[in-house]
Amino acid sequence: MRRFDAILFDLDNTLCRHEQSAETIYRGAFEYAGVDPFGAPEELWRALDGDPPPRDAAGYLADGFGQIADRHGVSVDADALAAGFLETVDYRAVSFCPGAEQALAAARDRAQIGLVTNGPSSRQSVKLDALGLAAAFDVVVYAGDLPRRKPYRDPFDRALESLAVAPGSALYVGDSVEHDVVGARRAGLRVAWCPADDETAAAYRRGEAAWPGGREPDYVLDGLGELVAVLGGDRDRPA
Image 1: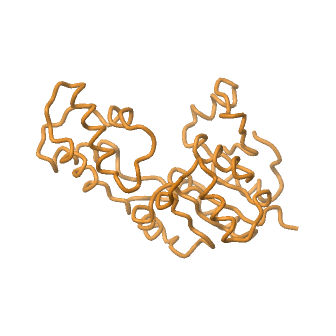
Image 2 (image 1 turned 30 degrees about the vertical axis):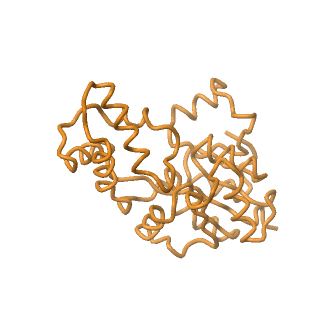
């Protein structure tokens, strides 16, 4: 008897990681715009609020650059910096996270597999091509192209409907507590959380961080390779 009828994966920081450094992209934005650099990538990340709107990434980034410019007392063309940022990013510059290929193979041997990612197809499909995963999944949901993304349940519902699988028979694997754990739990799926940040994982394990809405994952993985033990029934509760 199969333990799960479907296993769904997140993409960024779960199956793949970006090889371009944040510094390279940040500095590339200034070079493209012909602006003397100021600030640091960390300031931009802090200025940006949540995920970018899928159809207005340029405006989202321009707002962030504008905030940094104000903080540093600099007058710049924030739109040009946003355009430079988008021009510098190479979405094909990705590689598999450790254990990802092993986890995908084990999942494929045991159930239908799918991908549910918050990015739009224009950005995420090139990553799948670069990784050789363009035809690897039974269903792919680009939630960035939908009216509502994770942590809303809509992307999960769409994937399960396509696979004709009940939520309680599916497992979702992702790195984000806010988007993956909360969203999948809302949709009724079981969840394997594979945090990309060791410090964040330790905080939850020590009870220093509370699961949003009490939505705790079924499994906490130290690496994606541990999913094989979950699928084989050797892991029953979070570590």
